[in-house]
Image 1 (tube, helix red, strand yellow):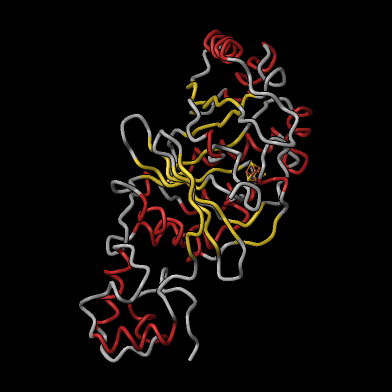
Image 2 (image 1 turned 180 degrees about the vertical axis):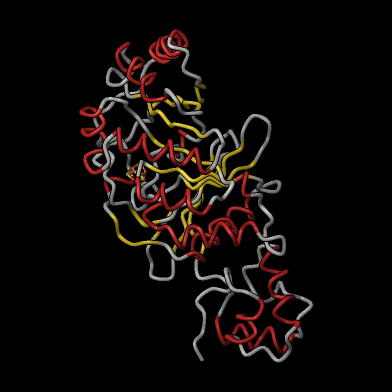
Length: 342
Ligand code: SF4
């Protein structure tokens, strides 16, 4: 028998077949329990006791990973360290905003190959891609620690989602299913550093999910220095891909703009950003860089942030000045990297 490592991500038919379930309806019952976030067979109380025991002997648990570390700050942000079946670790973060909305920030890779110079995960290099069930299970572990239902998901944790395309999309579909977690596609956001073929592929799927593109600079030479991805797909190619994407999916998307003190917050940076956003229906999310040990950038002062925001106002660039949550526990944008903090 080809035993699955995790039951998350499997259809009812696949569960019946791979677990050799004695009754077809058990497949549906298991799916229901998985939709409630079950991590043990003991929780599946409407399955006969001997069947629960048989399944536990057969595969151990319905999940392949374990939450093995937890940190939280006073704002409700919780960062979990999740140990995978091979002993590798990823991080997943529960973010709670001012309105009390719970968002899961999920990782898609162990490490990341993209090497953005301001990002902690980028310092790890790519260790491996996550399977779809490993992405889904992060949501399950976060649900266990959330004080209310998680209604939104952002794929902004460790790794570049468009470099692990199929497992990420499979996880999205599973999390969206009514029988499982019923998270609306419009409440999920994929964040990319600008992998153009991935953006094209995503456009073909025409999924109504939200897109966020990490821009950081609208100046080619600066962006190449900060984000090696720009060497491969420079700004003009990125913009072309975004225009086509918006033609396929006429929906506003966001440009993430991580402000690095004294680097990308000048009047010229604002002017270039205005040029880049022309013709695109976007909102720019300004977020101040979070300090990371070993990286030599600085967090812009509040004054610097506000000045850049007013420059963008002058250029009529739609934007928001985002308050970073979770900074105290290293769970904010660009700060995730296992083996260091947990
Ligand atoms: S910012 Fe995103 S794409 Fe860039 S290195 Fe970090 S995880 Fe990878």
